Each structure stands twice: as structure tokens, then as C-alpha cells.
Amino acid sequence: MILKVDIAHQGQSSEQALIQLETEISKAKVTTGVVAVKVVHGLGSGTIAKTVRDWAKEQEGRFTAVISGEDYNAFNKEAVAMRSKIQGHKDKDFNNRNAGITIFWL
Image 1 (cartoon, helix red, strand yellow):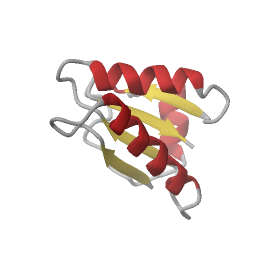
Image 2: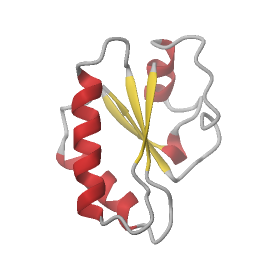
Image 3: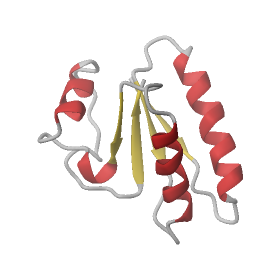
């Protein structure tokens, strides 16, 4: 299953969004059946999106893969491999180049 976490709240700072992201990912890692976390960070000014993706780079090795929404498609081998773990789960963002999300494959 893919757990969806929305951290794109109006008026929320990047620091607050990052705390929420870290908390939700930690919970997801110990939740049975969760294969990935889809983080909705929106586009807005781009500050939270940049913070999320910079944090993901700092966490190298912690996740099987981190897939940007722009690359979450049938041509991305990591996206396809992750989706094979959750067969039958439809996801409207798959193949839609949604720059407002980032997928963390646990």
C-alpha cells in the first residue's frame, strides 16, 4: 500500500513540513503493508518541495528509492519495481508528471 501524506499546508514553514515528513515516514516504516509514502508537498513557491527533495538526498541509503513526481511513470524502473510490490493499487499520479509529489519507497 502507498500511504499518502500531505505536508503542503498554507502558512506552514519548511521546518514544520520536514518534521511532519520525518514523523510520518518513521510511522510508515513500522506499519504493516506500507510499501511507500507519497508525500504531497505541492508546488506553491517551491520551498517545501525543495526542502523535501534536499532532505531525501541527505537520507541516501535509508530508502529503496526516492522518486520525484515528474519521474513517477512506466519508464522509470524504480517506479515500476515499486508498483509491482503493490499490485492492483491504482494511483492517479502514476504517469501524470505531478511535480507536487515525491514518492519514498521504503
